[in-house]
Length: 91
Ligand SMILES: [Zn+2]
Image 1 (cartoon, rainbow, N blue to C red):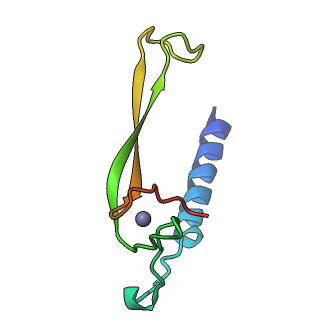
Image 2 (cartoon, rainbow, N blue to C red):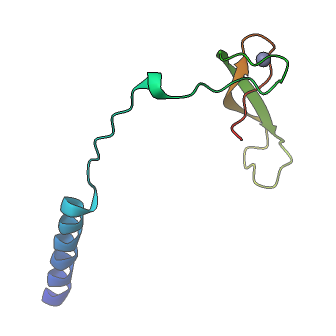
Image 3 (cartoon, rainbow, N blue to C red):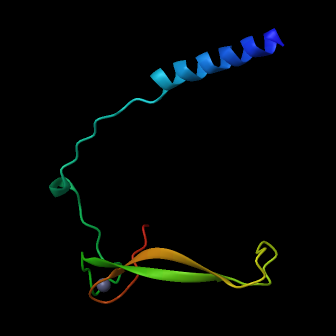
C-alpha cells in the first residue's frame, strides 16, 4: 500500500515537472497589416469581405450512432462572400 502511494507521489512530481517546462509561452506578434487578405474563390468576384453564416446538417433518427431516436440538427459556422455568397473554403 505504501508503495502504491509512493508511486502516485512520483507520478504527481513528474506531472508537475512537465507542466513547468512542457508548455512554453511563445510571444508571437503579428501585425495584421502585414498579412494577406483571403479573396473570394469565385474568380469573377474576388471580394475580400465575408460574413458569418450557418450550415446546418442533420443526423437522421435512423442513424446507428444517434441514440435519441429523433433527428438531430448540428450547426456549423461558415463564412460566405458578402458580394456573391460563395462559401469560403481554405484551400
Ligand atoms: Zn464573392
